[in-house]
Image 1 (tube, rainbow, N blue to C red):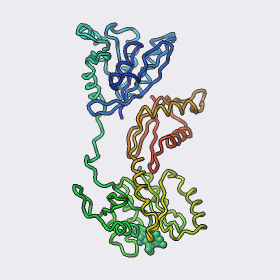
Image 2 (image 1 turned 60 degrees about the horizontal axis):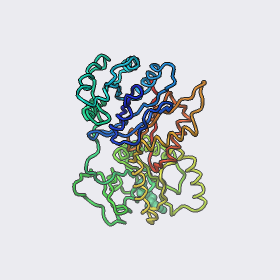
Image 3 (image 1 turned 180 degrees about the vertical axis):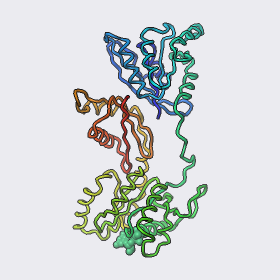
Image 4 (image 1 turned 90 degrees about the vertical axis):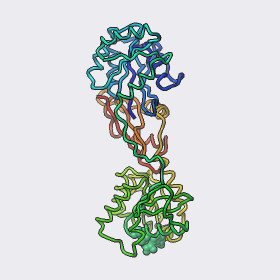
Amino acid sequence: IPVVAVVGRPNVGKSTLVNRIIGRRQAVVEDTPGVTRDRVPYDANWSGRQFTVVDTGGWEPDARDRAAAIAAQAESAVATADVVLFVVDATVGATDVDEAAVKMLRRSAKPVLLVANKADNNNIELESATLWSLGLGQPHPVSALHGRGSGDLLDAVLDALPSPPPITEPTERGPRRVALVGRPNVGKSSLLNRLAREERAVVDAVAGTTVDPVDSLVQIGGETWQLVDTAGLRKRVGKASGTEYYASLRTAAAIEAAEVAVVLFDASEPISEQDQRIIGMVVESGRAVVIAFNKWDLVDDDRRYLLSKEVDRELRRIPWALRVNISAQTGRAVDKLAPALRTALDSWETRVPTGQLNQWLTALVQETPHPVRGGRAPRILFATQAGTRPPRFVLFTTAPLDAGYQRFVERKLREEFGFEGSPVEVSVKPRK
Ligand code: GDP
């Protein structure tokens, strides 16, 4: 999600403008002398385009050099932004402080829109043309308070934003796509047969969807699921077909085609290197994951104990994966698969609202700040969720974070928001 930063001197109306952009009145505090407001992000939407507005109200009224303080603020906001709204008071015109800030803004390659705020009437609007002198191009006259000109400004913001990623989601979604993977003989074919038999229907076609002939449609838990690339499993009799090399290519392709992977293990045997390789593929793919320990009918108490040890050791990379203990042969707990798949997919598609995310983050970094490094501690300024499937977060920071601290934030993120069954990506964007 792109970031739009609002910068400008105190009292030019930044907060009012942010309120106008996000379309509500209460959230944003006015500049109060003595109150330092740090960068606060808000979710915004114009003409269906989502973006984050960062209100950079923070300023130091006591700063001896106010121009320098404003410039520093502008500098850090620009570093994290895709577009900068530089707000000037049209009733006052360009001041020295504005000009100092403009120097900083122009050093960046970021697009800057000049907002001539408080243009409440035609006269002020006409006068705002003198702001061309700032060298930021055409001033956009706006009355943040009354709304005048704000639509045109937002249109200009959309034009300046990087082009949106192409929409990959089909509007009408077919069945969810599941890959059934695991090394030979863990029971993939048996599970497929069980699913097809239990529900008495391998659905051949669902209205309005095209299903690859190598896929199978099955009913699990009252819902139709598309098991991708099961042709080999369906037709196979006995021995695994092809070499391990081709089997692993096939596995990779199935995972790629799926949204969620069910990784089957033979619970009666030790977790092997080949199992590990498949886990590795699934983790790399960023897909949601359900782990199914099959052949549970063969697991006695001793084996169960050993398995729990193996899981701790071998599945450290995916402690978040959901696990079910099933038997394709007896049908044990096969009905647990559907809820696990649904939970994993829900997590995979979770979007945390920016406000909620930053509320949590502010509390977290207050309680446990980044350790001091060479006399200074990097600070996390704010976070946004950049995407879903799987959830991807970006932390905007003053400097790169220690790997340990980043992992800490990731762990806490999971503790707070769950994401059971889904990987979560966290990246850090230090300001330049
Ligand atoms: P695939 O290679 O992963 O497709 O594995 P198959 O489905 O061909 O199963 C391999 C062997 O394990 C076959 O002999 C199955 O009968 C057996 N098998 C599969 N699932 C179970 C199970 O839940 N319990 C037991 N005891 N055997 C199973």
